[in-house]
Image (cartoon, rainbow, N blue to C red):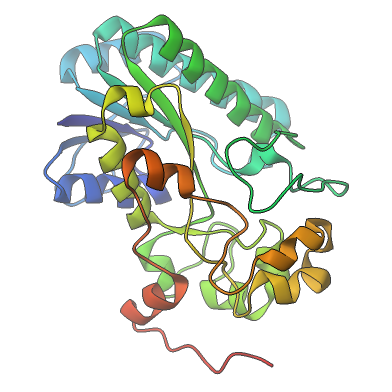
Length: 301
């Protein structure tokens, strides 16, 4: 399949594009910069520019688009800029894809619209799945809801298969090896200080597993994926101990429902992705660190 990845130069985009190329897709990476992704032909484009986006799709004629381009973190820019930029990027890409006759578009959003960054937030239940109410606490989370609603609109009103996925805290291969993660901490620092990972309910996912999910989404029957939203996360929590043993100290807002999150269980469910497209993550933090050659010290008492 001929796949165009917007935002391919980003931390998720690089790994995801490489995985799709390894799986035999013809991948065009598109964004403001080129970074030299193995097996990927890269071009530049400003996806807030309607004409530039239309011209790119007319020239490249992709079968599918994976839309990652966005302001990628909460508070990474002024609130209004985040809301406007992420919303406009998504609508521009979806509208251009519909006009160009693209068959499928998959948009990357986030778990943050659930609202866990708000001080008074409490989950309705755990683990959290795609049916959980959304209560965004900042413009970034709100922008992801706008993106999902835009995708749903195009799924209803066009012949394209359009859907969204909510990747958990993405960790790229170089980050397992010691490079700083999205928030500036290393993986080992997040493990050794549970307060760092507690902010996002200890969620994470290996970027290569996200690539595998996208590959399955692209090749799944249209009626299994169009209009759907998926959480894409690891099976376990990014913590030395089960969430059930540490939530009272580090994430008391999770409530007593977190007592059910014993060893090997995460705060976010990936059951829907398993059931509808057969995806399951390959990596745990233990296996990814071992593969990267990083030794794990004895688990603290």
